[in-house]
Every structure is written in structure tokens, then in C-alpha cells.
Image (tube, rainbow, N blue to C red; front, top):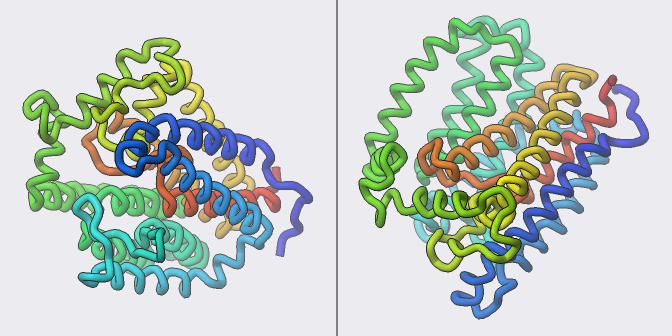
Length: 366
């Protein structure tokens, strides 16, 4: 086992806590109006987010002190548990339906989203598999196919909910890991063409997904329907200008932008804090991603490197998709903005993942 350093990556901790602090402030600002109307409590969402943030930060520091190779030992067990949860959530009367997807399991007053935890389970399992079979990864039959088979099995179960956004993030993250592990580019080209065809089939199989694509191309073709969210998001970003309207002064959160504390929180940030505020958030993400890549490159073994790449890849893909959607560059997918958007499962998972990354940094050979 490699010898650890005394301290983890402090810059990574600072960037994470900085984003979390911005998120807590903006969840309150974005949700206060809606929370007052629906729950008669302006702090309803903010208090729950603060609770999950506190639990998540505590979990992050606990995980930071757990040797990262422990995840290699337990990766199969964790993956099987997540598969079991994905099966349970599909049972009518057990899984909770929100936003048209049966993606949640209720636990008392709270709920968890098993597909979120599957992302981290798949990263740990794939890091183990690829590190143990690196010499076989250039072989389609012995390396690439077994890797993708388990990934697309999980993707298929997530699509039964259906949750295309979470599934796409998981697949994208795993593809990055497999490519970094040494898979042949020629294999990816062929599979990429099949993937595009399959993705098109998934879109065509559901009318609401077709509407999302058409509204992305021309949101004004259905301004009160499928194009509503994109239009309202752009109405928030535009008036923000350079300095913003001021913290708490958003107009779009007054029942124009649906539930702005979740997927479209970056639109409220841009409206209230302007271009400068939005840029500051993006720079914090860039700092976090840079430290993560640095840790991956300096990890003492292949498993640690692939595990770090998976975690940082998952975060980067979610940030790119979310901000792309909010700014009208991508179709609406339902992907939250890591560490900023309201949501217990996604926030807790991301903080635990960063805890794993911090532990790897304690062994990194800078």
C-alpha cells in the first residue's frame, strides 16, 4: 500500500466548500418565493439543502480518511446493491414518480434516487475492472465488450424509469474512463455510430423527447409548452447583464421559471449576480476540475488514477450539460448542477465522491 501524506488537497477542499456556500445561498434565493407559496415557509428548501449539505460534508471528511483501495475491495458488492435498488424502484407502489419518472425511493420524510448512487458504483467497479484487465482493453471481445456490457445493463435499467439524463451522464463518464484506460479509438468510432443511432431511437420513441429537441432548435415554436423553460431561462440570463439585478432580486423566480432551485439555478445566478457571478461559479468549477485532473495524473496506481478520472469526468459532464441547457446550447435533460442545485441524493453523492478524490490526493505523487 502506498504511503499517504499528512494532508489532502486543500485547494480542492476550498473550491468544493466555495461552490457549496454559493449553492446554499442561491437555493434560498431561488426557492424562497415558491417555498412560501407552496409550504408557507420561505426557508423550506434552504433548510433541507443545508441539512443534506451538512451530512454530505461530514460524509466527505469521513470518506477522505478511508483508503481509496477499499472501494476496489467492495466495488462488486456496492454495484450489486445499486442494481437491486434499481429493480426495487421500478416496482409500482414502491418507487415514487416525480416529473414523469419512477426514480425515487421514499424513506420517511426524505427520498433517495438510486440511479444517482449507481453512477459512483459504476465508476468504482469499472476502475477495478479496467485496472485489472488493462492488457485486454485493446481487445474488443475480452476488454471493451465486457466493460460496456455492464454499463449498458445499468443504463437500460435507468431508462426503464425513464431517466435519460442520469443514464447519459453515467455512460459518458464510463466511456471517458474506458478510453483513458487504453481502448482503441477505432472501436469507439464504430460504437459511436451505433450509439448515435440508439440515442436517436430513444428520442424518437418518446414524444416528449422529440418536443425537447424541437424546442431546443426553435423554442418559440411552442413558447407555452416544450419551449417554455428555455425561453424563461434566457429571460433570466439576459437582464442580468454584467453585474446582475442584485442578490434576491430575480424576477423569473416569481413563478415564471419552474422550480428554479433545481436544474435552472445557474439562470438565477446569472440573473441576480450577472456575468461576473456566473463566471465566478464557472471558475470555481474549473479550479475543482483542474485539481481533480492533477490528482488523477499523480495517483500512485492505475486504479486510483481511473477512479479519480471517473469522479472528475462525472462532475465535468454534468456541469457542461447543465450550463449548456440553461444557456440554450443543449436540449433540456433534467441534469442538476453539481454542489449548487437543490437535491439530497445528488448533493450527498457528489460530496462523497469528492471525499474519495481527496483520499487519493493524500497518496498522490506530485
